[in-house]
Image (cartoon, rainbow, N blue to C red; front, side, top):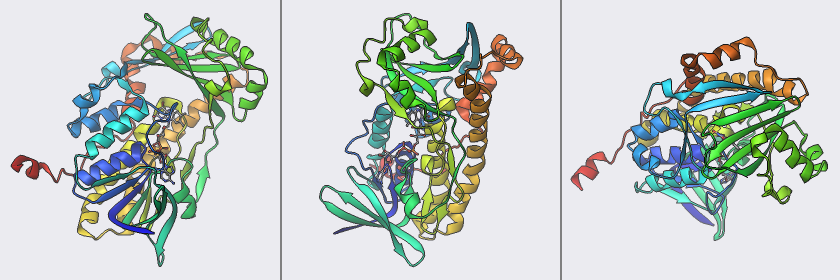
Length: 411
Ligand SMILES: Cc1cc2nc3c(=O)[nH]c(=O)nc-3n(C[C@H](O)[C@H](O)[C@H](O)COP(=O)(O)OP(=O)(O)OC[C@H]3O[C@@H](n4cnc5c(N)ncnc54)[C@H](O)[C@@H]3O)c2cc1C
């Protein structure tokens, strides 16, 4: 058994964990980030980097380098309801440093954060390290036990942050109560080729009983085909050819582009979950990101909420961690700060789910109501939903310092 020590041990190298690791190391806190996979390569993950996250990258002086990486920029969100095209959100009118959503594969984004974090000697990233249990001292969490190819490792820490996603091992080990808020759908993800001349906008298409969203990504569209909760098996039972025909009916512009779907292996199921922890923390343990609150894909806000949790946590915790005076009350402050933006966002997602998605999937003929028509005809109004989706209800700003600024200047 190997024994390691860090001031903070972050479990999970997703958006929440990598951003928190970067910010704490930047503030001079010794941090170990454990990621169970050997790399960040996972397809069909969230890849929408919203203006709120771009603003954080700007505050860290990283935005320009980030935007030099291959990406697409989405300025508008539209929907095709039956035969009617409606424009929902226009990011060009929102305040801040970025008036677009950057679309970048999540592994590139995580790789970028890892590269930035490695500049700090306090940052230690352990790949292939799967946290399997909590270490306790009395009633306090005092570290984690991880499995690695070299054997088990115990990492002792003043704080363990569970950023291990929606199927978190740590929140289960900590016996934290999860409230299931009820998702009405699941999503089948697939890729279809994108041609020169295709619109550079995310487009939702709604027909009675069917719904699909196409997100441009380089030379292909990442497509979300929505099914009723638990309905994926019935779609598969209908056969791949029927599925392809269905896609071409919903999105006629995709006619002839489904040949690349050779088997169901080319179609990935996302079981949608919307849930929230009642308590995000315990002595020595804090949950953030999807671990604290799994988000619906509506609005594509999961990554950005995870990042905002990390930014808020770093701002509130770097000083008590550095001074060795971290208390449960500090962790509760993080929950208090992030709970209402999470709750509000989830409520909005559930509203869209219940008013639009569930009736459409149940066979109702979708019709844009007058508020949607008004929105579509008044471009200046479209910055309001753009602001809600792009910046969220409580954007976070970097409040943790760069403890290395002086050292770098001297160096
Ligand atoms: C198919 C799909 C599509 C999505 N589309 C979008 C989108 O377009 N836009 C958007 O904003 N959001 C989207 N989301 C949601 C988004 O991906 C998540 O909300 C976001 O990634 C949450 O970040 P996180 O860091 O909290 O958790 P995660 O991204 O889930 O990261 C958790 C990390 O912890 C690691 N891990 C898990 N258990 C352990 C363990 N025991 N030990 C060590 N490491 C562990 C995992 O390997 C993973 O790297 C999508 C999600 C899915 C599944």
